[in-house]
Amino acid sequence: MHAPQTTSPTQAHPTSTFSAQHHPIWPHTELPAGPQWAHAVCRCGWADCAESLHDARVLARRHRRTAYTDVFYPGWASRISSRRYQADATAVHVSLNSEDHAWALADGIGDHPLPAEAAARAAATAARVAARDGAVAGLLAATDALPGLPDEDTVMVVASPLSAADGAGWDIAWVGDCRAYEYRADTDQCVQLTVDHTRGQELRTALAGSYQDRPDELEAYARRSDHIVTTSVGTATATTVGHTITRRPRQRLILTSDGIHKPVPLRSITRAARTFTDSRSCAHRLTVAARYFGGTDNATAMVIDPAPEDIYP
View (cartoon, helix red, strand yellow):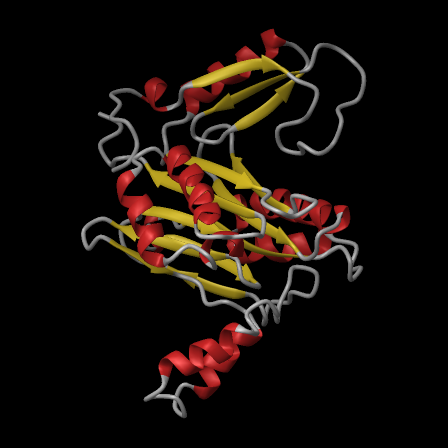
């Protein structure tokens, strides 16, 4: 729907290669000294590292020739706002033949290098495992990847596509207050797929019956506790991880940190999803909207567009 129309698998997977000093899967880790390291990347999110530009080009050709399965076009953007450290992180994992996909967005708890590192490590681990084993497995793998210290923790949302046999929808797992939305163009609605794991949301649920005639009062009361998360990657278990799946044709998926969805009204998120057809432009616009609406937290958005069903002849 949002991806450019293409007529061949090669066009569906535009690749590029370039020299670099960091690994595309572990961007926060310096590569060891050696040959001229190079990256091969694709618009679908696939990335790999080689010891020369020639080898990177070989990898890119192999990716284009073997990637005949589902295609997704991710885009992401971050804004640091008034914080000292950017503690949000995103990760994408796509297998060489484009058979396995997953995406993760993490928001480190605190304004310090330790939660920033925890978010980056958790997102990279979750995306890599979720692409093969599903969103819940990816999130729990991220728990094992963290040291378990109070200052090195993060909240996160992880997404992967379900197979056609399982309904061809989205597989979503989360802890804390990162969110996933699906923009449904047929109804022009952004549907929130996750439920925040926060003290504020617990109050909304517990007191909904008592405040039936005073929803604004309940919202004002609960909002004061929205910053208190009740689950995190560092403490996640199979029983505390949030999990949902959709069983309908996939449409645009939007992952956000609370720096986006707290200040930006849902109607504005919907407007951005409707207006900006390129996933990268949409993600960038959401971070700009966070600043426009007075957000002071790190703001990160990831937008994943399924390619049109007729992308292959």
